[in-house]
Image (cartoon, rainbow, N blue to C red; front, side, top):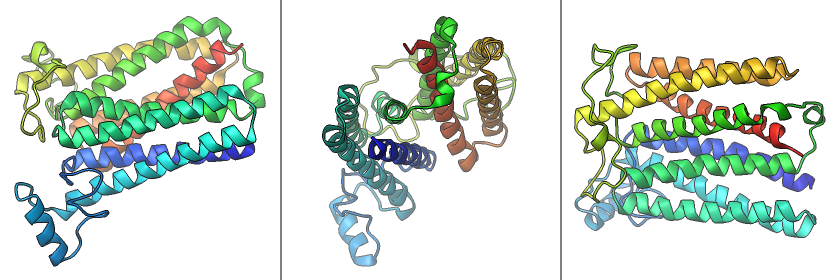
Length: 324
């Protein structure tokens, strides 16, 4: 069981790296840095000298080679493949080292999920960054992280968790978790449709609290497969609708989290309340900085990672609230 615990912890760290690399790839517009999959212009790594670059461009003449975009794309893929190897080891260890059927089932599900992630990685490239595919792929990354964390919790007995009784918070904890999932979706949809800078001011949006918005096209999940979705195809009102929805949802999330934190505080679970509060304040601050300073790369990556930490923190609260 210790081996499963240690390996799942390594997997959690690796999943954070993969999420960060995915954000890096997206933010530097390198989603099509390698126009094929799983290789890069037909190479295992990226072309790195004049001969390889000439071969690469002859293979894909409509995709001029840019090493600054190829590296983020292929590094992300390689780390994702390493995460898949960890999942395979977890399946093996759970079947050989433990009789815990629950852990065995969850490790198999993890491996299936990562295989699906590989499929969506292929579709992301083959369908030229179709937003619904990219959004599903990014959601799969968060789900992979959460599942690794769940396996870690099940393989280790935390004494402090046994001392916390918050079973009376099932409803508010579940609502907070659901709203957070929705907020993450809006954040991912904002990113995949290149709407992060649709509102370049704060707290107003384009100088107004009610700018022109096109929700019908902004939240059309059935876009036709186009030639290329790099830099997005939506007009400005549609992008504003996405961005503005993400901001409004953040206000709702903050209100619900404040209620949850107050309930945690008075249920003798102050450390959980404090952790949630710190993460929430950090995330709000990063979001504002992203707008005011025009999406600084490392701040935007941090915004993704803190969202992942918020997800794990909220999952922990639900895990404790619903434990038998």
